[in-house]
Image (cartoon, rainbow, N blue to C red; front, side, top):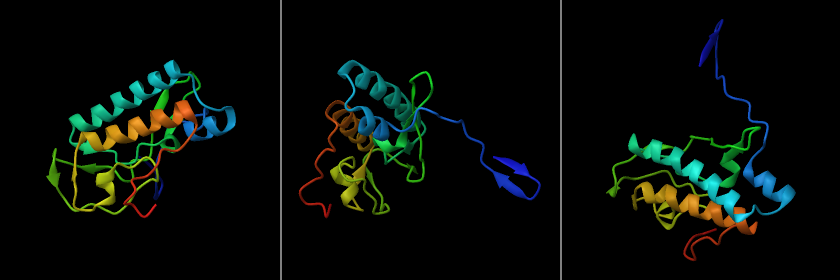
Length: 141
């Protein structure tokens, strides 16, 4: 954050590569080795958060941008929240169709690092197939 006179400004890195969502839409699915490398990068970012007691809760291709060198960057921490592994806490009711694990459809379900791992796995599926994974059958999606 930067204070510019009386206004606070957020200064962020410019990421010219676009979202993985847009790249798949434009160019088609990624080769498997490249998709795995991307998921490993984002997995490291998620592990960094988890080690500090935070869940991202919205890992999906739209929230993954690329640098000009091809590195993937996790963005949009609007749903990030503190967590204690397997502790039940009432959470906001928000899901991203196809990328949210079943526990995010239940406001009182336990959450843990596995919540973000599901989003990573669903993202990998999307990157190599170009298709959005199916939502849980009991969801309203």
